[in-house]
Image 1 (cartoon, helix red, strand yellow):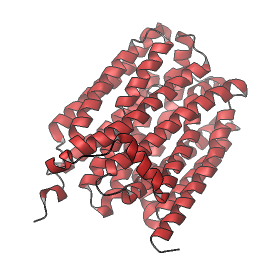
Image 2: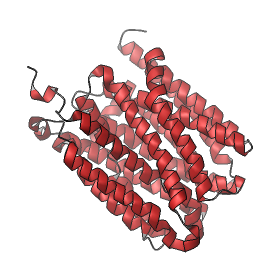
Image 3: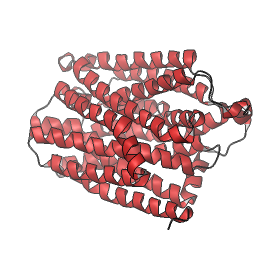
Length: 405
C-alpha cells in the first residue's frame, strides 16, 4: 500500500467540485464589477483613471495574496487557507457595497484582492490529488470555472444593478457576491479534506518572495512567468476599460455590458474546459499557448475597428484565444516546479498575472483618456505577440533540458 500522503483524500470527488465553485465565486466577484464601472464613474463623479484603479488595486492586492497564501498553504495546508480567504472575501464584497466614495471603494478592492489570492492554493490542491495524466484536464476545469464566473459575474452585475438608485444600486450585485462567498466557505467546511499530510504541513518553507526567486532562476519557469505577465498586462488593459469603451462606442449600459460579457464567458468556459485539453493532447502545451495568444491578439485588433455585431464576435474570439493558453501554462509550470513547491510556484505565476493586472489597467486608463477609446484594445492586441514569443522561447529551453534540441 502506498503511503497515505501519496493517495488522494477519500472525498476528492466532492472536494474538486467545491474548489471549482470557489473559483466560480471568485470570478463572479471579480467580473460583477465590470459592468458597474461606468456606474461608479457617475455616482462618485470619478475620472476614467480613477475607475481603472478599481482594477489595478484589486490586482495589486491579489499579487500579495497569491504569494502569501500559496506559500502559507504549503506550510499549514490548503483547507484552512481556503476557509479564511472565502470568509474574508465575503466581508470585502459587503463592505464595497456600502463604500461612501471612490477612494474608499478602491481601498476595499485592494483588500478584497488580497483575500482573493487563493487560486494558487486551489491549483496546488488539484496538483496534490491528481495523477500526472489527469493534471492538465483538471487544471482546465479550473479555467472552465473562470469562464463560467466571467459569464455569471458581469451578467449578475448588469441585471442586479440599479443605476437609477444611486449608490444604493450597488447593493444587490455586491451583496449577492458576498453571500456566494459564504456558501463557498460552508462547502469547504463540509466537503474539503486536507490534501497534505501533517508532516508536510510542518516542513519549513522559505518566505513568499523566495518562490519568485526560484522561478526567475529557472530558465523555463522564468520565461513562462514572463509569458503570463506580458499576456495579462495586455489583456487586462482591454478588460479595465471595456465598460467605458462599450458606453462610448455603442452607448451600452450595465445590462448590455453584462450580457456581452456573459456571451464571452460561455466561450471562455468552453475553451478552457474542452478545447484547451484537446489541443494540448494533439499539439502540446507550448503550441497551444502560442496559438491562443496570437489568436487573441488578432481579434482584439479586429474588435477595435468593427461595427457592433462584428465587435461582439471578435471579442468572443479574443477571449477564447486568451483563455485557451492558460491551462497549458499552468500545467507546464506545475511540471517544472520543484517537488513540494507547486503551491508556491503556482502562486508566483498567479502573482505575475496579478502584477500585470496592475500595470495593464493603469496604462489603459491613461491612453483611453489621452488618445481615445480604441487605444487600449490596440495596445492589448499588439501585446500578445511578445507574449507568444516568450512562450516559444520557454518551449525551446524546455526542449534543450529534455534533450530534444
